Length: 113
Length: 110
Image (cartoon, rainbow over all chains, first blue to last red):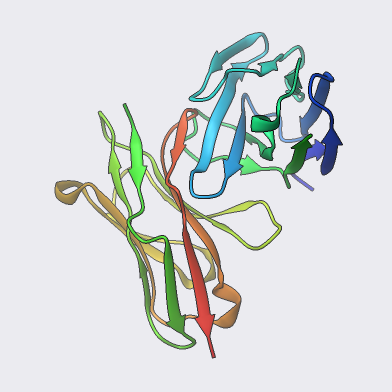
């Protein structure tokens, strides 16, 4: 089944403790992206990647890092999480320059205390 | 810069009635436009997309949307709403750099 898989689904952590949210897609897509969803704000793009080793900032990149060492994987790294990063995170992938839309993962609910 | 405005935060509609969700966008070129739906606790599912051709596009679940370049709008419609259509709906514009509106929550009353 074609899908984007994120792990974990739920995560509670403490301020300052580094964490990684993994994302993997099995559709051989070039484009991958991370979004955060907050009430009343919709989804905001954190980072995106056009291919292996090619990444760029989205609208809200502060406090986040990404890497794209393999085509299928696009992990999101929070080096020193803070409470304002408590949010619902989505990974997504697309096989074209977005022209066919992104396929989204099921989301990761992150709480930073 | 690209952006999307969804003027309606919340809409309540009776089952069987028609539904229209508004979307206005700002984009520097011919846009790629999308509507996504998010059911409670779920991820986002693509309903339909527009990037060229016929300005009236059909999607899944009986939804359609009309692209109006002169009004910078891409409104979503459904002729007869079912209780299962209760969800949050997002309009989006762009390509790999995709910008979303804040969403419209649809409540369906019996």
